[in-house]
Length: 145
Image (cartoon, rainbow, N blue to C red; front, side):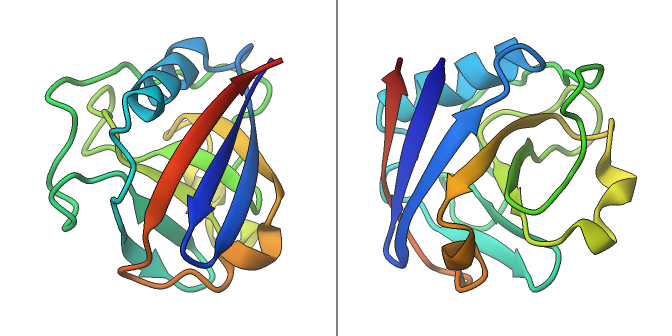
């Protein structure tokens, strides 16, 4: 089982991945994180009560890793509950590095089976409510257990 620690300037987020439901997306995220891709990037989009988004190397939401990955939408854990990590995209099968963290289930049901849920925060839910635009992902560490 793979897990991650996302060290932000506001605190530490611990993540468990949905490897069974989204193996390609988890692998992509972990590969990028292991290469240091996310280190120092900001959360460039924050919509209170909805999502916190990061993973754009340009810091404005228009960048990615230089390739696209397929959506994985059929698993059991494809529901956008608070603390879920999900891939951002500009249309089906166009994700790459940008992801978002869900802040509330209230406004996110329409994302279910449209964006790939690939993990959830198991520790640090209080921190995500305090993230603001420009906050930094200082380091993401992947662990295999």
